[in-house]
Image (tube, rainbow, N blue to C red; front, side):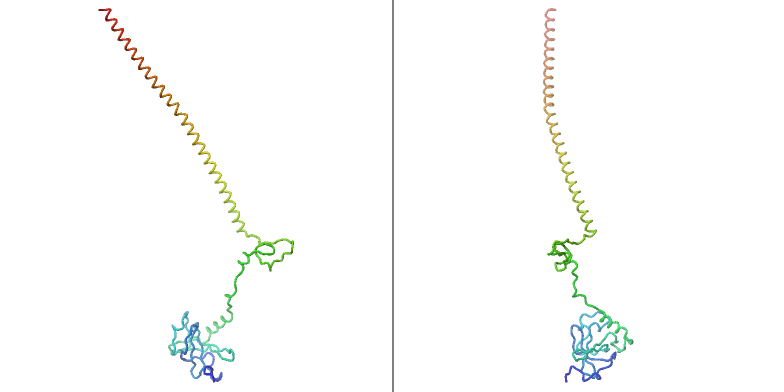
Length: 246
């Protein structure tokens, strides 16, 4: 006889029965509890150990601990009976049933039945949109899904309004950038021309000022000479008069 199996189903406790069992094995997903009066063991999954989240069952129970459990499920697999136990619906101090109407247990069973695991399904929408068909050369579908006939019309994705608006905005920005560059070039050319004109005007004014300075200096020397000659002539006239009077 296999020691891991019970002699018959009659030796198992009734469904929703509460009893105190001993922890035999602790794993990553739960703990196996020995059912009293029977060699069969039941599993307390970590989700049924406490009303709070349990990541490590070894933090809740240890081998040899005595815990209060409630039989919440029976399942036949490969001619073996698998028993599901729960600790969180039983008060561990007194053994009182915290879910006498089995409302919490029924809700959890319904969740298990209706739950669907979508982790294995991949969303390929973005990948399809970014592909290019090798048959027609258009984007948005694979060659195996292409319905184009040889020499027929090509079908491609219609651009969304947002994409069109972005393209228009980018085109306007490019036009504005070109206009600004042209305007800056024109203004720089004007500034260069104005600088050249100012330089020419300065070069023209400089020789005229030097000539005027030289003319003024020559005039001053001539006037000094004329004054000097006039004074000398006056002196000579005075001397000549004094001689005649003497």
